[in-house]
Length: 309
Ligand SMILES: NC(=O)CC[C@H](N)C(=O)O
Image (tube, rainbow, N blue to C red; front, top):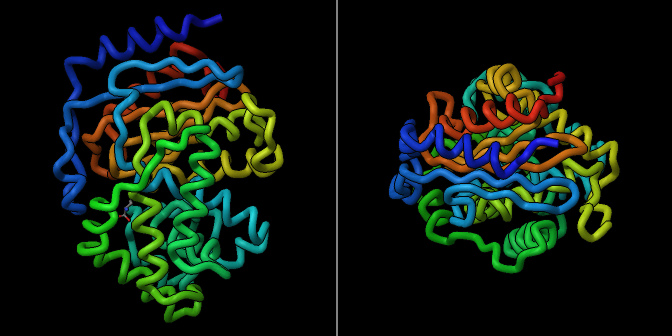
């Protein structure tokens, strides 16, 4: 049995001289203010033990990682019918790219690029006022993490509302193809708030533990999704969770994972553990530079890759 504490300590120690690498996202003004010199890593095993190093207890903006939780809610509401609104193929494009949308008549490639996530949010909003949809997501994430202290950072949401021109373009474009049922500003109001969820690595690893444990929370025994749905969400994370860097992440790390421009990466070792890493400096495709390196080291030292050890 791997000594996880020792593995995490060794990764932290080896990466210490590199902390600060990469470039903090600056197209959202509030995120540009984040100190790049931070690094946290949390591993929660399916028997509920948490292993943390570095800044694993510092809340950060989870940004696109929230797309995993919204997708889970949307599938719970409309089931497989969701796939009429969004595809399941890797995009091979940037997370905020607009080009494919026209070719594919307003149906985004997958639920993890921005356009796809905006369509998923629109699905979750059915029958709700925007404020209620935000509340539903926040309650869901708090329930999953078993932690009422998870919050949404309103400053980040406001900052993105004021500057999210590309997301407005994507949403308007989809609305023109009738792939949004609600007014663009309502859908984006919810989307910007979901992206502004503020969580620590440990909270995030706990919230996603059901994906490592056949859809149930192993601590409470409560079922969140069926084993089949958990497997499918993991498949989507593996193929689409890192945008145009998904192939590279699979090649180096070999785990289903979802990144966010806040510098977080959530990853799943099915049947074993759920993992969250945070380091705000991003690489060229907008994924945490050191986060991916840390996960590569973790997968190599534990043998957790889904492709074999
Ligand atoms: N990759 C990301 O994390 C992008 C999320 C961000 N809120 C955006 O819409 O641009």
